Image 1 (spheres, rainbow, N blue to C red):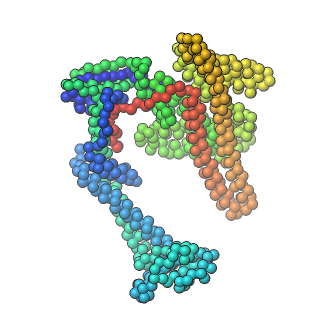
Image 2 (spheres, rainbow, N blue to C red):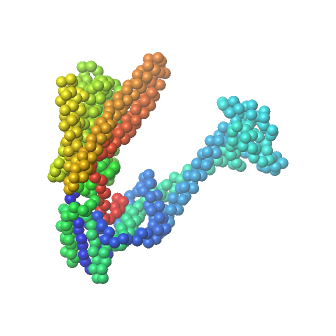
Length: 597
C-alpha cells in the first residue's frame, strides 16, 4: 500500500482538436485536471430533461426484480420510454397512497362491522358521528350535550354514535371520530382487493420497463460525460490556434499519455512535482485488500508527501473490532452472513472490497473470541479443546487494562515510527517522534514493570521528553539570537503534548470496557433465560427462548455498532492525530462514468 507517485503533465495541441483530445483523455481516465483559467458555473444543457431522465432511471434501478436488459444497439425512443416510466411511477404512487388510505379506513371500521350509514335526508339533515371510546372514559358520555347511543361494545372500547348536524367539537369526547364514509366495510375491502391487483399489474409493467435500464443508464452516463468534457474545456488555456490542458497523472500512466500525444500530434511535458506543488493523493492497495484504502479515505486523505496508513488502519480496525465484540459466537454469525452473501457482494467493486473487510473482521473476532472463551456468552467446558485456547480472562481488570493500553501503545508507536521515517532527512526533527516512542514505552515499563523497573521507566520517559523537546525545537531555523528563544519556546510547547498523549493512551481502555460490557450482557441474558426456565419448566421454556433471541440480538447489534464506531474512532482520532502530519485532497480522475451492468 502506498501513495502513488504523480507527474505534472501538460498537453498542447491544435485548438481544432480540443474536443477530440478531451474525449480521448476522458476515455483514458488517468488525469486529475488542473484548471488553467477560472471557469463559469456549469449547468446541464437541458436541466428539466436531465431531471426527468434521472428520476426515471432511479425508478427502474429501485425495482425489486428487474428483468434482463436490452443490449446496446436496440432501437431506443428515449423520450417515449422516459414518459412511460414516469407514468408508471406516478400510477404506483397513487395506487399505494389509495391502498394505505383504504387499509387505514378498514382498520377503523372493522370493529364496527359491515354497515351503511343512512343518507342525510333520512335524518332531517342530521348525521351520525362514530367514536371508538375507551371504556375507562365512559363518564365523558354523561357530559356530552349531543344525542348519543352505544351501538356496540368491544373488549376495551365502546362504539358510540353521536347525532349532530355539524361535526362535533374536537373536545366533545376524549377521542376523535372515525371516517365512516358512504361505502360499507365490504365495499372498501373489495376496492382494496382491486387496488392490490392494480399495484401488482403496475409492478409487472415496471419490471418490463427495466429492460430499458442499460440503454437509459448509458444515455445518462454519456450526458454526464459530455458535461464533464464541457467543464474541462472551460478550464483549458486557449490561445489563438492552440490550446493547453494540464493535470496530475500517475507516473506509470505517462507512457499512455505519450502515445495519445503522438497519435494526436501534440506536445507532452511530464515533470515531477515541484517542492511548492500540492498534488492530490492517490492511494493504491493490493487487489485483495483494496478496501483498506476506503477506510482511510472515509475520514481523510493523507498529504501527498505523507504516508499511506491504509494497511495499519485495516489491521488495527479488525483487531479493535474483535476486542470490542469479544465473542466467537457473534463472530461466527458475521462469518456465516459474509459467506452467504459472498457471491452477491462480488457483483461490483464496492461489494468486493466490503466483503474482504467483513471477512477480516469475522476472522479476527473468531480468534479473539476463542482466546477469551466466549461463545454467545457461554464459556467452554473445562478440559475441552476450546477451553485449552481460553487464555485471556476478560473479567480480570488488571490484565485487560494492560492489554488495552499496550495495544494503544503499539498503535501509537507505529504512528510515530512512520513520522520518524518521513523526518529522517530533516536533521533533528526525527528526535521528536522517536522521543514520543521512548516516552510511551518508558511509561508502560514504569507502570507494569514492578518496583525494580520503575526508575528505569521514568528515566526513559525523561529521555524521551528530552528528545521531543530537541526535535520540536530543531524545526525552527536560527538566523538571529531571538530565534534561539523561539526554539526554546517551541520545544517547551511540545512538552505540553504529554497530557494529550496520556489521554490518548487511556482512550484505548474503551477496548476493555466495551468488550467486558458485551460479554457481561450476553452472560446476563443467558442467566435470565435459565432462571425463567428453572422457575417454570413448561411455559417458561418458551419465554426463555424469547429472552435469548431478544437478548443476543440486542447484544450482537450493540457489539457490532460499538466495534465499528470505536474501532474506527481510535484510528481516525488517536492514530491519525499523531501519525498524519498533513492532510491532502483525493485524486479525482477525469474519466467516463460507469454505465449500469
